[in-house]
Length: 520
Image (cartoon, rainbow, N blue to C red):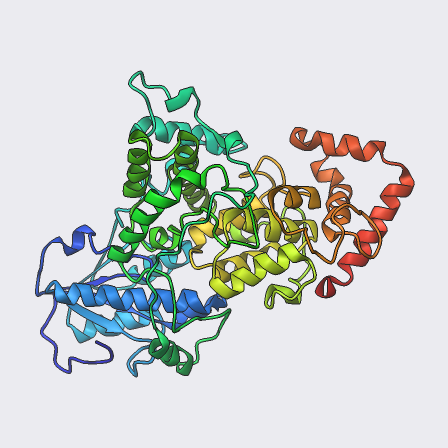
């Protein structure tokens, strides 16, 4: 399975590269067998090292890649798997491809289009220098092309997701009635999906299979791969293949989707995922296709098994938001990852790598991320991302942390979410306002403030919640940039009414907090 297992291999006319996030065994490539085709999968330091990754992310991807190689072999395909510790592994994709093309005396290379600009550019530039034929094919995964979102919004200052989402619903006839109108008479039921979770209904059981990848993890560590977070190598709970992902999809639709909508913005120390699907890793590695997931959710609604608000909210994340941010990514790269509209440069506090902070909300959200490589979207946006924006953390450093820590984070989906939605670093192209809040929002949507070392109601003083002073100081600092934004006009009207002594105290409190971020 690994290494130069074929000293004199039978000649191949075509090599086909399968990347680590292209783990769809139903891709049209695999519909027929050809002994002249060799499928290539490779574990390389190029991909483990470009940012520091969570241990579970590396482990889950390598284990799933190895399982796909097994499936392809059992189906009769020729497969070359280059493991992380193979002596022949040159630890870069182009270098391995160059060697393997010569090894198999092949005259054509095919690869599925990468979803990250970095890899796409690398393969295109390398292919242009080769004497043999190189062909890129579609991964046959998304609803849209790379350029579709850009074409839709040509000439517009802001690229609003809602208009794109409505277009997608209409085109694909998703949640539409017989008259061509949206089910329930409206497009978006977001206002129904903002409830805190009071402890009932009961949380669904985690029915995912457990895998022991201890031996693989030992090889990864011995190969010198650096990582962070808890590997949980002996009890990893991320799907190994499409069959397991489909079983988990069934479980989510049957037990969890009915409550997803109402509590999708809720947070609690009593449950890490609450009613979220945990399908994003399987979706983003292409074990599952977005079309089949959307279809299953709509069928549940049509069968009366899940309410419209829950199903619409779930489908909007996939048919709308997921496709939309991919379009933003391809339209804005290269260079989007360098945007910093607010000029933030503060390094990440040390507790981003340990979770050891007295702020209970951040201790839980960051600690959960480090332990399980997962946090749901409100934890990412309104706890961790909220603090990062209020504190003026360097958006590029925040981006790298998010890209590394989360099991489902691939740059095409993570970068617009982090840099645009969370950190407002693109100046408002993606988000119409900065997504920030004081402690009041976190208290309303979670149980985090109960038992915290800080007082959620105080703005200043030693025991005051850091979110409060940082919230108001953020708007004071950036009044020149944000003061004319109509969506946050109320904030500036409130600031105008504040006595000068109050704003001075807020500024002083924020300055003191920003001077000791590591110790909060």
